Amino acid sequence: MKIAVCVKQVPDATVHKRLDASGRLDRSGESALNPTDVNAVEEALRLKEASGGEVVVVSLGPEKAMESLRKALAMGSDRAVLVSDPAAAGSDLVATSYALAKALEREEADLVLFGQQSSDADGAVLWAAVADRLRRPMVSQVAELTLEDGSVTGKRQTEFGYDVISAPLPAVVAVSDAINQPRYPSLKGIMGAKSKPQETVSLADLGVEGERVGEAGSRTTVRSSAPPPPKSDQVRIEDDGNAAEQIVEYLAGKRLV
Amino acid sequence: MTTLVYLETHDGTLTKPGLGVLSKAATLGGDVAGVVLGSGVRDAAAGAGAYGASTVYVVDDDALASPLPQARVDALAAVVEESGADTVVFPASVLSADIAAGLSARLDAGLNWDLTDLRLEGDELVGTRPALGDTVLVEVGWTSTPRLALIRSGTFDPVESSGTAQVKDVSVTFEDFSTKAQLVDHLVEESSGPSIEDADVIVAGGRGLGGPEGFSYCEDLAGALGGAVAATRAVVDAGWYPYAAQVGQTGKTVSPKLYVALGISGAIQHKVGMQGSGTIVAINKDPNAPIFDYADLGVVGDLTQIAPRLTELLKARD
Image (tube, rainbow over all chains, first blue to last red; front, side):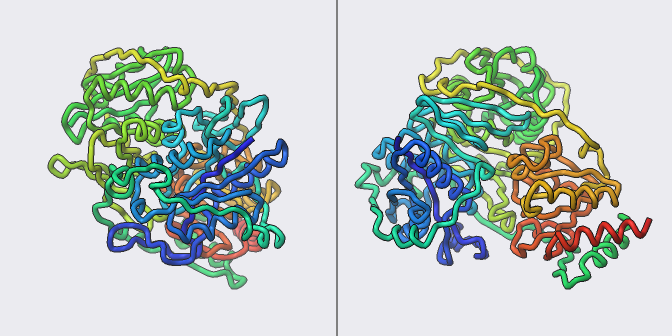
């Protein structure tokens, strides 16, 4: 059983995210593994612990993204593959899904896992595009996952209750962040991560033509950006022991109590 | 411009989010058509005429009986070809996001998501997307057709007109991989307790409650305020509270006079379900929680200290 987990490096939660002059996200600050991707890594490790196999994390991003992939290795993943190429910068969904699918075709994993959503692009769309390119069945937003007799079964929430969906391997599964509580890497894991295989590949290595990625391969653009209209009358307090009294006063002022 | 609007059905009727997006698409002009995909959905399709569609394309096929996305990508690709559409607009849902993304890959068509507005500048379509936790409004465009757009839920309300639509059937050959995923069960939880949809006051809890027992803070405070208790998707999925109480994109949309959020970080998926509330009060120990960006009163602190004290003070006022 080989499991590929698609992950992304994003600005750390403590960083004030902003767009640069070209309308792209400023990625110069502190970075981290996308929080909900950690749930996907955890689920892959649990499947591996139950039935054996290999877990490889796959990402597309700048060279420094390997630092974040090491967290997945420290948690217990076996190997990391980073597709890094200046030509891929600014790739939208069409271009990203194309390049990532090429990297995944090379891995030939039985199961491809995704996390719920990237914290920077707020997208929750990549898995469906990648599944279509790989021509594989897909189950998304999975909050409970089981693997049995060569197929995966996922329970997920929709607007109308819960659906239980089954798909034969090889398949693509996107997990919800409710699926598990990820482990923290152990000190031993952190030390061991450094010596695990970490491969950086170029687009040429994958046979991806330059015109399929980056701005050339993208079909959407960012035209401009602006701050939203301010919300007036916002009040913010830090609790100094009197927060409850202040809340009552606030509500009373608005005649809500 | 030829626009297709993806319409969803539930229990044999067209659902409101799709009709809202259809009404919006009709204001942009050009040919506007609806698309209805499913099994036994043909009767519902014609209803789209009253919301601005001149044509409704229908793929009625047993392969579309379950609410799964991949066979719908096949069907929609066929309808795009049949109609010659240059624009396809989707109301965001668990199902439609996967369909839109799959279609994006299938047709190498650009997809912009989470849009809160669409407008034309000459021939160019421009979308508005609140990004980075709604801290910036981005104007987005497309560099080729078809252009795919996912609209944030609750953005546009249906506007009824006197129009009628012609129903056109389209037949589809499905890809082998598209029908491999199968729905094996569908579960609906019965609701209990006061309904959150009609409540004037809602006290909602999130992961910051620490566990299912943390909902006692919400229940006590809701009792003191005469309100109902709601929950986020994360804690409902974790089994801390029933699905019927869920507020957000996949749950209910509420607009009480007062919404008190305890331990809720306030991701977009939650925000879209409660942003219409009159006054939003948030208590969270994380000063960076997105909910503070749109709470009227934001309190940074420990809810396990503040909520019981607040309950006590409110009870003393009665």
